[in-house]
Length: 427
Ligand SMILES: *Cc1c(COP(=O)(O)O)cnc(C)c1O
Image (cartoon, rainbow, N blue to C red):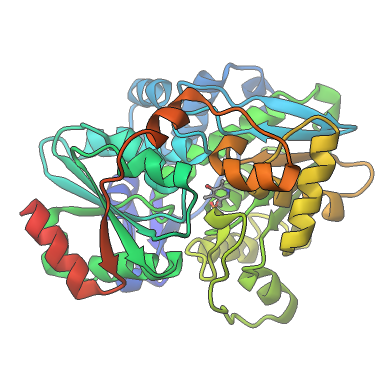
C-alpha cells in the first residue's frame, strides 16, 4: 500500500511506515494514493466476517503483509460480532458496541495493537493519544500489558462520562492517564505538538493511536461490508448509511468501503452542534468555532483531523460529492429522537440517535437505511436515563470499572507540563 502525506505529496510511505509514524511531515495525515475496486463483492459478502475482513484488508494493504498473517491478526482483533438490527421498515442499526469497551473504537484499537505488535518487535513504543471519550478505553484495553509498550492518554477533564473515563483510568500498569484542563481539541493540539518535537519522538518511540493512524481506519472499513452482508440480498441495491461524526474517521472508513466497490449509494456524516463540516459544505468556508459540550461528547470536535482524507476522496471522485450529506443535529432533537425510538422498543445513546436523525432527514423513501450504533447505551447511562426517564441495565464490564479507583493525574493544557510529566514517568 502506497500512502501519500496530504500536506506534502513528496512524502510517500508504505503501510508499515504510516502505522509506525502516525502523522507525516507538517502534521499531514497519510492516505492511500489510490483505491482500487474489489472484483468479487457478491461472493465476498457470502463469507464469514473474519475471513471476509482479512480479504478486504489484504486488498487494501497489498503484499506488504502476508495473507495468513493478516488473517491471524484479524481473528484476534475482531473477536466479537457486529449485528445489524432492524429498527423499522427498511431501517437498520449496525451495533458496533459488542467489544470489550462497548464502542466501535474497539475495532480500530485492537487491529492497531496487532499491527504495532508485529511492526515494532523488540523496539520500545509509546502510544500518545487524545480521547474525546471512547478512544482512550479502546486503546488502553488493546495495549494493556503488551510488552515494550506504554500508553499515554490525554482526556478533557469533566467532559466525558464517568463510565467512559473509568474504563481506561483504572487500569494502571503500562497505561498512564492525564486529566487535561481543557477541551478535546486542546488535548489533540498537545498530541500534535508532541509529534513535532524530535526529542519526544526519539526518546519515547512516539506513536499516535488517534484515527490519524491509518491502521485504525482500514480496520473500520470491514464492518461496513459486514453491515451490507447482513441485509437481505434484494435490499442491497440502494443503501444509505448515516455515521455520527466527530473526528470524521468512521465516515472516512465508510467512504473507503464504497470506493472498494461496496454498494453504499449515499452517505450522511451527521454531527452534533459542533458543525464545522456542515457549515463548510454549505458555505465553502472552513471556520471552526469554539468546541461546545453536548450529550454526544465523543463528537465534541470542532477541528476534525480526518476531514482532509474525506475531502481528498470527494475531490478524487472516489465517492460522488452529490451523494454525500452532512448536517448538524441540535441537542433538543437528539433527545426527542432518543425518546421516539425508545417508544418503539429500541434504546439508543445520543451519538446513535444523531445518526438516526441524519438518516431520517437525508434518506429518500425507496432507499434502505443503516445508522451506526457507535456505543452501548450504558456507556452514557446517566444522560440516557435522564432523557428517557427509565433505568437501563449496566453490563458487568462497566460496573467493574466503575467500582475501581481513577488513577489519572491532573494537567494544564500546556505542552511543557506534558513533556516534563511524561519524561519523568517513562525515562
Ligand atoms: C468516536 C466516536 C464517534 C465519532 O467518530 P469519528 O470517527 O471521530 O467521527 C461517534 N460516536 C461514538 C460513540 C464515538 O466514540
